[in-house]
Length: 539
Image (cartoon, rainbow, N blue to C red; front, side, top):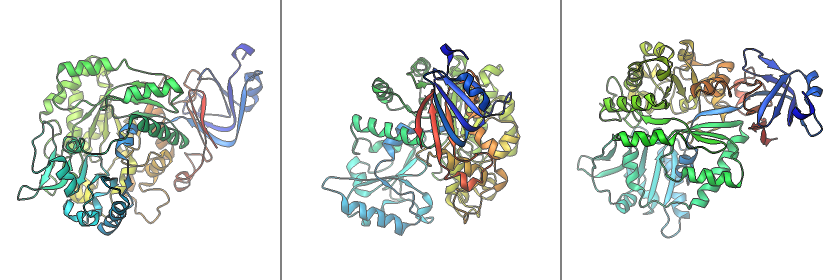
């Protein structure tokens, strides 16, 4: 390497897991102009070094390709994960105590806003504002349940929004009402929750921008160098990102998939195609997000057979054939699609849609998100059709091995027994992307990597693993955040590996994420995060 091509930065003193089949391991990496220019041994470092090269000795850390969260909602999360975090509430007593404290602290005209509430906290009771109104003492409250697809509005909140009975929606959504037609406060799916938008408090654009940038910095400190962002329904997102890049740099790369909802016509689809041109230095629009169903707990997952409440037999798109036509329109234009599909019928319909496409190029543009329960016969279709699977192991925290949780009870023993079949999909040859679905679960990739191996949260040995036969190896889990994440979006030539020519997106752990005990990995320090050749986090 000549003086003119000397590295900007050299990372040494590391065990390098390259995930490059041509050279699986190394001891040092050279970076220039945001890309990896050399991978080698410690003896190569003098040849790469110039007068202005910064040499960073990572003192025995393990260096991997930069971690990419395969499913995240950073902007939507900033909007919705505001206020009181109820994720620690395990029963109604804890919920009421938390809400009462927040109501006492509220000023005149204030609302209690909360998020992260587990359906299991209701102890099997129907979700109803009568269960919380006494604790709130008349203060209006809006609580987002952990699944992101449903919420609970208090009685005063319903009155403020003028919600007095059932509503009709163009997509699958419901204002749940009692037998007398009075709303219970349970709002299921986005269209129903959006009825509250006009009365809910909203932060200024400046505050949202500051909170988003702080969030991305916190994410980078956990080792993330990028995220596949599954939301762009708010019109000011790209303006906000452009503004951040006018003043500095994003600490992570964001690949954003705008939503395509039922009722989108050809003009709307063509607009989505045109939107794929939008980009900044570290963000770009790439793909389109669909919903084929909702959630198991909300009764809106599309199932081959109804759940125990007689629900779950309808798709999110009232006309599933319209979904198929929309996906085909985008595929013919070369646009990638990602589809939320939790229930077995939803997964099958997405695979059927892809199978109707002609040619491997059009088929390889697609992936399915979540895949919480899927029968044996659908597993080999992923690899055969080139459809990537995208899954979030930490969602297991909302289930129990004994199937006494709301998710399992709704599905029944057979379907609950095939929960989150990560290992079966990998063994069937599928590309398997891992992620968090933040704010549904925490964004920390160490927690996701560990849970993928343990089938329970790290640091919680008292938890019985859920379907433990679906555990991934340490290498498989790491691939889900690196090489498989890159492959799923067609970036395998520039990302997901540590090799010359690849982007210098790198993560250094204090332990080896492949071989360290999974519980230890869950809290292991992240020594360094580098995005585009720039150190964005360092211990």
